[in-house]
Length: 266
Length: 342
View (cartoon, rainbow over the protein chains, first blue to last red):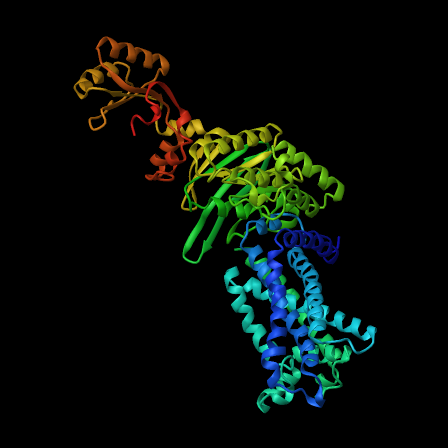
């Protein structure tokens, strides 16, 4: 069996195991799924009044695309936490003493978290509908938006998997991932339009992949027209996001797998 | 006889700490090697190296004909490991745990299910099989972990402190389970800090301390290193000590020890129960009243103490209430005849 086939076959078994845990302890989902709802309410009703998107777009309409992006980025923490927890348990020794694929634990974890992301995106969509967000483009484009979000979520899971393997214990994972997540999501166009940033930050915002996911999703859902920014990333947000997805996977998948093997060798 | 596990010159350092300092071991097919030593002696490090979980800084390892360091994946197909910290998933049921392991051994869907049921049945877990394992007792979890190690019917089994932390009755159950396995010809390497456990299960024992083997032999050979049997008596009246000493000295094959603090006398003997009867008759004639009397063979505790100058695990044995006791033949007296001379 090739290494890739083995990783998929064994990863499937591990993913099934992770999903059983979600079924047995659904509480772990409740709070993580609640957080995007909190963000919608917070920005729609608290900060929203102070922010006016360009072209007279309704702020809530503008906001939901950003929260979709933010949701999948924050959701990746779930991957990191799950892995950090696994690493602290005896079950990892069991996995390592079996003649199974070395990457199966990571492949399985990132795969089972797709299910989690589907759930959180569904909840986000419902919340959006409640506060007045609508899909205004074609259904095909909307499907494209969801697919792009899931792909980005999957890739970002690998980043957080790496963080989860770096931290010494589960307690550290939330703070550690915030170091990555906070600047990426808040210094982006997710909550605040580009024009509101000081000029020295605008370059970062324009090339930030979270901005491009947000821009892509807004365009595909028909919530916003093309970006006002002239930079390539903002003019080609779907392509630029796909490039990032590829780049993240190429870098973080091997990095995480190597880290996993070393961390569990202690 | 073929050696199924062979390790030579194992060295493992963590910074300044040397966990293993040139350990050699060999286990012939179908036999049991006990690695005996206190916490931190290097037992777990040795098992982790032998089972591919850790790479040594130096040394060679061959298990079931496979060079473990060169071909860890192939070695994993041949071994079963059950560790000190039961490697079961607490959210999965016992059945799901075993089925998952079967799948990961690539036994196939059907075979994995059948095997999971077989093992649950065999380890007396059938009833608990559909409950998440976090509801299991410590003993049940260990049995499930052992079952996990047996899913693919490995030729070689490694058990790292299989009964540490278990209550005495779970420990006895675990020993029965392990003995049943051995009847089927499994080659086993077992680590333990309980002398009694090594005595009960192992054909061959390596005593390790500070990452080195400090003694090697069968339980009997090791015990004979610290001398043979002895009679221990506790007299009721300290005034009788002298008279009692004179009586037991008649059967002594060595020096008689008298402990005036505890009114205990220990005397090495060569004739076992026969000498004990002679001594008791003599004591009776002399009118010595006894609180306690025992014929005691040296335990591996004594071996360990005499080899290392420190006990394997201070105080723990007696709190755990278990091992050590059965080696003494209590003839009469108090509830804990074996502790006469302690």
